[in-house]
Length: 276
Ligand SMILES: [Zn+2]
Image (cartoon, rainbow, N blue to C red; front, side, top):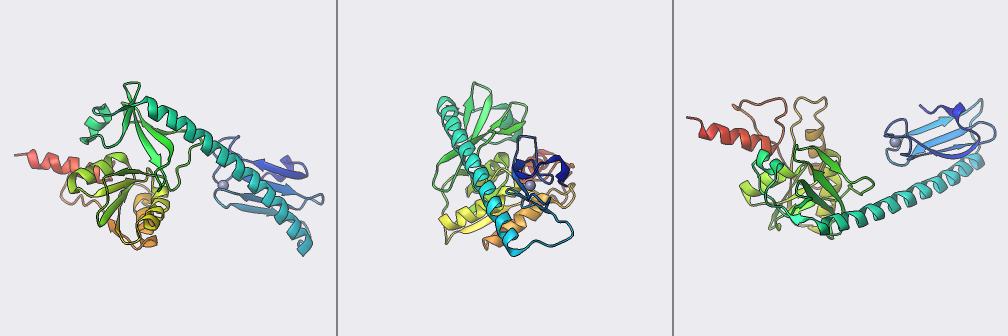
């Protein structure tokens, strides 16, 4: 909910009550007219709130609100683009200064190899985020303890890390370890989308790039999370591009609460194979 009385008459950019993260995350445009009518619109999540008194707006007033909101949206888009450009430049410098990765505690813990990733300052893994034409937009860093971060301000939507070259089939998944496991086990080319919300934008970008290929979305089965965001997003992404859905099958395995993806499945399965 917007606290309308906190804002004076005029146009503002503010934090969104639905998706806002921190006070300087100003994705919300608010315009308040002299008679206290107001319109608020988040340019990221689409949240809308209006403040009307006594009467409905006239068509002319509606038009004026739309014009002012357009101006706020252009300001927001320009700032976001500048952040993306700055982050991409910073990413290029860090990437160029890093070494090709060979060994890392995270890779050891996940039992996967390095595929086109680098290591920074001897301890931080860097996974590149590229768009469908190969431009570097940002980096995901993974610390030795496995904690992951994106570069602030970098574009993520529609960007991915590719492993292998697709021939007939391309698998899209969320995380690096999952993608590396799928590639090492099947030889399939893989695109790592980094999170559930980015599966569909990446799937669509790849559908445009490869119109005739079979796209497979490999789900994280978030079986202990309300609404199973991994399965939900993977199903929607597969449907959006006429692709297939692959789900890890933990039947008869001693599955832990955190076992959700194809890397977890592979490690459990490998354990079973070596047991007497
Ligand atoms: Zn929002």
